[in-house]
Image (cartoon, rainbow, N blue to C red; front, side, top):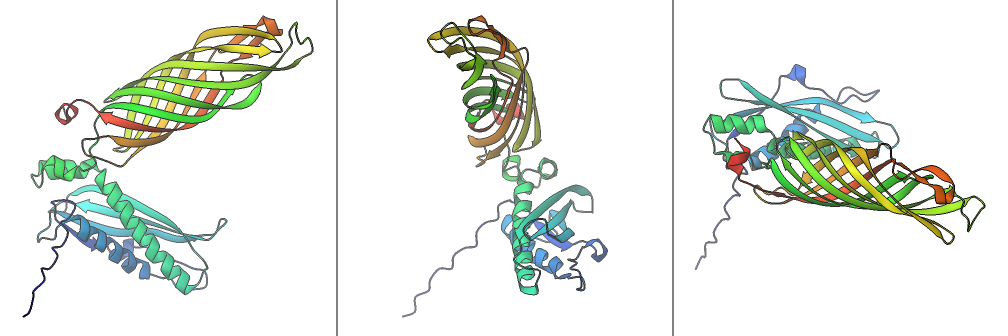
Length: 346
């Protein structure tokens, strides 16, 4: 008896859209040039093969297609600054039926190169092509021009083609750490917490951080100038603007007001202080682990500058000690969308 085993169905494409990959004209393609050797144009075919695999996984194959993807190797070169590396830059022009341009997606890769020899170069080219194809896939998910075209042309509904859709209404809970400039000490470690909310181009947040540093002072208990300790709590509120560079990357800039309070001690003497000061805040963040309508992980870099932040500490013979000058640090947060997707798209 012969038993027939079912054949596993091929995985469905990521998008309910058809696309056809083709090469740009030869005069637009760039080859690898190694001194002493003729130009190596095999990179074009290597890149085409890598992108063909990615495109077949992302899209359906129909004739005629909904999109034409025109592939161009913009540059490929060996960088010899420090360790040997091979850098590849690729551009895919996304074209509508009839030849109307929709958008261009640039992708790139930088891989290590063991030696400027045929076999290591061939291996590096294949790896660079693979990484560039994955970079294209990631960048495609964030391309709103293509998504808008497909929705407008009734090719596919918005939820199906805008997989990287991210709400313009977010609640963000964050924590981080970095370096603060205060006291007479060049730097001090500072942990921080924040809660923020954003709506389209506007955001507000409250934050709290704590730092300890030292400064030179003298007191009745220690008349000779010595190192005094300063412990500062920083509670602040900021209101500013959001600029979304792409779906997953945001730039935020805001003025704010911060309450700086704490204690300075030297020997057995202490003095408390508090002061409200203006500040300027800026950050750039990247969202990860996309879920179409759910939370995301966000990592970023933030900086803050304080103004008029010196306080008088007469108990330690100081007329002005900078409680906070500035800070820079890394943040990790979780963001939660609020409201409806329909409200975001109004």
